[in-house]
Image (cartoon, rainbow, N blue to C red; front, side, top):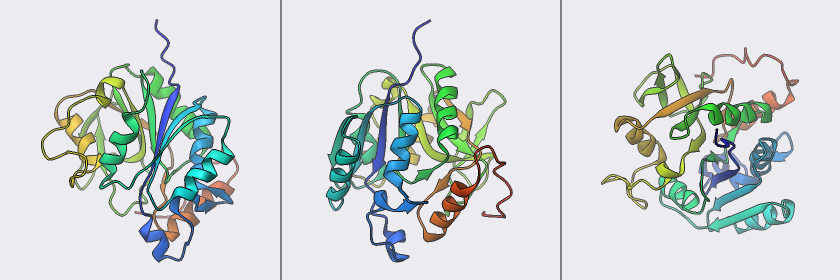
Length: 250
């Protein structure tokens, strides 16, 4: 059997972080700290825990200090850093995935906070999925203002993406096969347009692409001040402690 190991990754960190700035944070979003650790360092640490040391990262043009910080902190890694202000999450996704090498790769947003052991388990489970499948991290923990709902069948394949309800929500982490990264985008979903990454994922499901979901107990989408507080509460919990209860965060 061919080696199914995933050895490449990408981080989307080009968002403006406007809601955190409005809440009083002055640091660029990738350098906002949760339990003393910048978001970008936490996500890179998750990749390293999963054995991934080749990374492509995109920052926006107002975050050149983030590029310098990462280069200094992780000089031993195989890093490609893009500094570009993009018009959408989909454009950022296309920028980083165009620079990934052959084979499957993990893509994470910088604000998807989860425990390292849960991230590693997601990658290991994704490696066991069919090589041609796109794999989404999903979670039953809903702490997002605009969650992307997912319905899955008993085999773990995504049956539908979007709408007002579902079984779980997407968690900002994806395993993308090389073939899918090279797909021609549909009309209306061009980089620079209004389409978002979630639109691309929904398009994959609608066109019958194999898309699977792997559950992670808790992922916090760190967009607001209260999200930082929630992630910090989780970070203080001992490893292995049950994730719930944390109250109703929907």
